[in-house]
Length: 475
Image 1 (cartoon, rainbow, N blue to C red):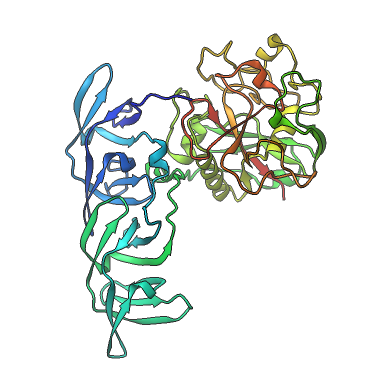
Image 2: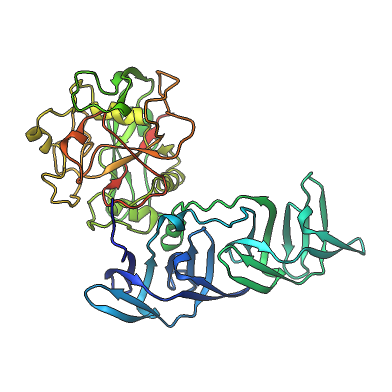
């Protein structure tokens, strides 16, 4: 799971994509509420003029969204074969910056941040440097101590009418006398004397800032698809194969998986079994569900998320270098677009679908030769992903359940199975890592065993061999 440290990805206006390192110290952006300079390694992504109004957008590693005009006329780009060279801003469409583990876990040291929702839709986190605000209520001047405030809503732009919500539910409504405030951003930048009318809401409550990267950069770099089409009635009719049309000639095929039971985990006679596959137990899947016939492809991901983070490009190759949160965001967006309940499979659902009614160790066969007919692994992949559905499907018509890319599951990982229920188990309630299943182009055939388990932190995008497939619940 090593990756190149030169891992910023620049998408140029002419359609070309180049990976390297942006060496500028910071990016400056002029907003409607002030000029902001963000250290380059606190940037998650930028989009140049992608908004309908030609506005540039910057997303930070702690999920701030900042819109305005990027003031850097050019960015310095270091490409290993070409050296360092300036790249004019107007030639850039978007940049996805490399992410390191310390940046993904970046948090304000005191763990207390105010959240500022700007009138133009921006989101900022930091601290209000002002200790109090002044307002008029019933012709009386009031001083509002910000340490005693839960939320401030600015309701009228012209007259700065605001509602101040207190922790116990009390509300003060009046006209703000204070016209400007100063914000100290988590990122180390100060916005001095920002006009109060530029804010729509200020959340003062002391809460730990949620800084895990949940693919917010893709919210900016691409919009949700407006052309997703599916007939929900087909699910009620128990149709075996259903297509979701993602637009741009991109179907997402689903296969109905029947309810049933199976033995989850590896039996004692499996000589390659691991302790984390114990103990084997009979599990019941109480309700049928639909599962993606293939892993989510790069084109499918682009149509919904607007970006392609993959290291091995290919329209029909599985998307990879996606975190668990990225996969969840994809499912959430597709759920909203279709009205369906779309999610990642549970670990039990995944193994049940992989075994496809068979009891053999690898489901689709037990010899290395046979397994090569069903999936891409280290001995036949050339250490690169391949277009989905090029190998044989398993007995239930699912492709690449073993090999190509490992697949995220919903469950938290535990060293041994922790399942309180034998019916539709969901795994541990908490954990540090999420489950991965299925083996990959970097794994040997022993990883193709149906019971084989892996895991990774949910924020991780380190691997070019980690992807996912979806499940649709049947109501």
